[in-house]
Length: 249
Image 1 (tube, helix red, strand yellow):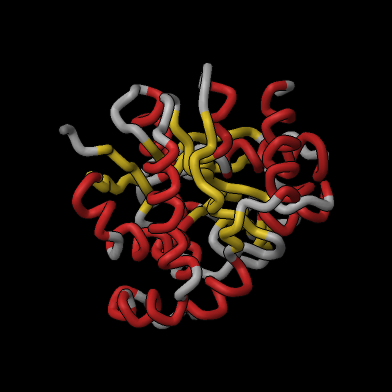
Image 2 (tube, one colour):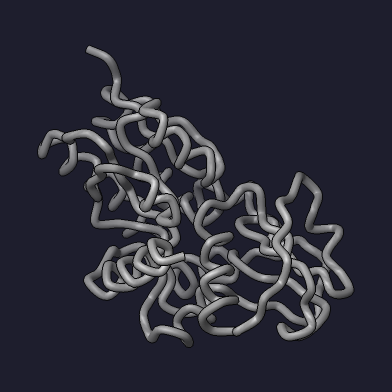
């Protein structure tokens, strides 16, 4: 029997869920775990190269059919710290915004905020590796993931989760576990239980991955105050609100 292909991100924010998947006997024997950055996870699901993927919610409008297969997500109910707009000028003075090539949700989120909340109309620029070093003057940049903890300081840093919450009063979901095909209920239950192994054992996750963390990163603070993993009703409402904006863009 072919193994179930699961595609996920390997940023700091997914390590608790990866820990659960790696420590689940069911996942070890029945699934193949493949790691990509967010936009590639989305592409793998869209192109039917996997069964389950941690998908940036920004690509949901591109999916003809999908189902959410887990009670966990990558979400935020306050500052997320690892999805930012970095700038050396205030928002009204930004002429151009470089978009993180690894992102599929944050690049759409910043456009929603720019049009509907900040009321600015910058130019948009696709980026390549190393683009974050070009941020300066009137050129800002969206930066996601682990690089947010190592980029050079900028005088204006806008946390995109915090900005969304100020705009809507709702939490934000960056990525959810989706499938475009029917998933067996027993598989879904085992998958969900595996994710919970890590999400509910943060000290064990930190100990397991401690050599990976850079000194600028405080894992306990990040996992308990910045990332919110439960896909609550409020988060589903926030996700629906965001997707509705995308459909009307």
